[in-house]
Image (tube, rainbow, N blue to C red):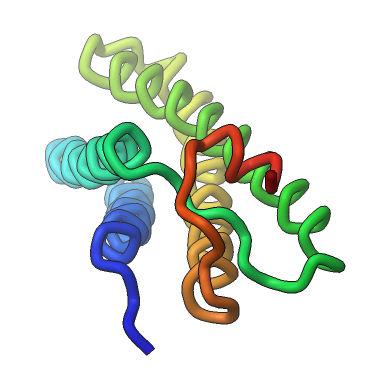
Length: 153
């Protein structure tokens, strides 16, 4: 089985980002503020690398539609919409968390950070599941525009 290079790299970046978020969360629990900030910045960089690869692929190549059985397509589509919504919310929360941390708005950052981290972990997990469904468990369908891939048309 040959795995597609760009989706494999981008999915790996999200997993690495989530791992760094977990490390950062552990560091802040130990009151290691400077290390926490550096690790969370690295987590953000990996998330940005993911986004650049994903957006570039979407714009220049397209997205891969679900290639599994038609009987599972509706479940995959619902799951994909959930993942995309989660990823969007996670990205916005991530930006807000980074901003509040860098601006020393610590009270807000302490409240938002754990929520952001949990959303990001679920984003990473659901992203890996989407990757597995598209490229490992089933052969990817047609590579087409994002709207067509989401709607399965």
